[in-house]
Image 1 (cartoon, rainbow, N blue to C red):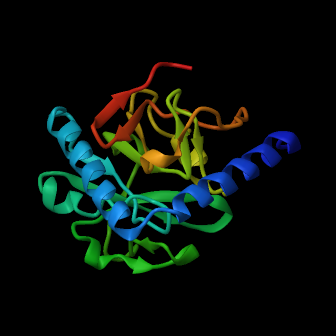
Image 2 (cartoon, rainbow, N blue to C red):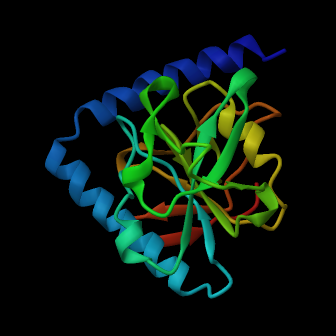
Length: 196
C-alpha cells in the first residue's frame, strides 16, 4: 500500500508542476521541444549501440519530440501502448502518422500494424514526466505505467527523463516502487545522473 503522506506530497508537487507548465506559452513549448529533440538526437549519434529507442507521443505538458523521426531516420522508434490493469508495451512505429488516438487520448500504436518490442530489445527509453530531479527521481501522472515498465528493463538500459526545464525540481517525494532515471534530457544536452 502506498504511503498516504507521500502520495499527498506527490499530488501537491503535481499541482505545482501543472501550474508551471500552464504558464508556458505555445512558442516556448515548441522552441524548448526542438532543443530537447536536438539534445536527444546528438546523444543518440554519440552512441552507435543505440539503434532502437523507446519514445512517447506527447500529451499536454510534455515536450513534443516527434521530430526525432526526421532527425534520426536510422533509429527504430518504439511507442507505448497501454492495456488492461496498468500494462504497457512498446511497439515499433516507422512513422507517427500511423498512430491512433487510444487510452487517455494518447496517440498509440496499432497492434495489427506495429510489431511489439520486448523490454530487453530497447537500447534506451525516453520517459516523460510532470517533473524530474537531478538525482533522477520522476514525477509521473500517478498511474504507475512507466514505473512498472521501467522495472522490466535491463539494469544497464539508459532511462532518459524528459520534461520542460521549468519542472526540473529540487525535490520530489519518492516511494519504494518509484524508478530512477539514469539521464536527464536538457536543452543543452543529455546529462548522465549520479546514482541516488
